[in-house]
Length: 296
Image (cartoon, rainbow, N blue to C red; front, side, top):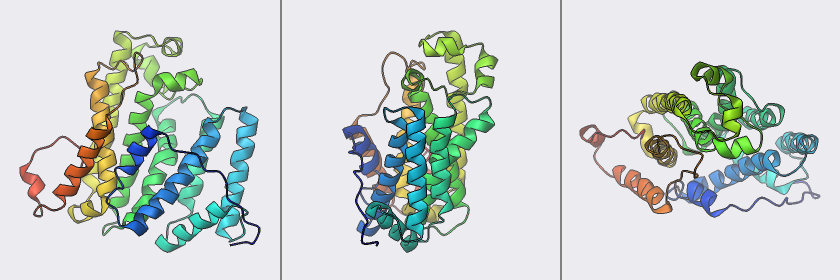
């Protein structure tokens, strides 16, 4: 580590972020848990650069500096001690560095775009903002089958789509609309209606379509995870189940994401993590005798 390296002030996690993040990784071995915590801190800090209260030019400048410092850290010469610690995790678990750079491109998209014309464009954003995180974590978890990477990609897209649907109102207040324009046109629901939180039949039909798309990515993910990789991915599976239950909550609320923010209570999240932990102790293929709609 360079002698002049300094620590940056990493963002504090709110109670919600803590429960969403800490519970799924609760049962990881300490070295892997510490690695995931470091990776999460990088992701959180990168995301907060984009979401902070500042003009776009200033946020873009800070993101460029952050990206440049990451590249310097990969050469062992960053002035940020945290990024040098991150590189030690990258090296220890042999994580491809392009995943981190792709993630930062996703953050850049949030600064450069506030509308998406097609789902193809949105899917690219979801890959960069979320699938990259899954691919990074996959190297820490370990896996036996290359196809498990497809699990990480599809689960990341499913999680991001669910996040987008939950946060429609919050994002609209920031001037962002992630729902593709082609979908808005298809269901005759306008950007003006979305920005003013208009809840009507057309919005419900649009949301039903979007929720079904997210469901499909959860299903794709489930099909890509081999049985002998499941115990290694308990943390990811817990996160997948938590977000799938969140998607169900959106549907059961008749897609009304305007009146109040839809969330899961911490005890429910803890129960999800515990159930998966217990399932790992059951005989192999026992799950085949228990029918479940959950993606894990």
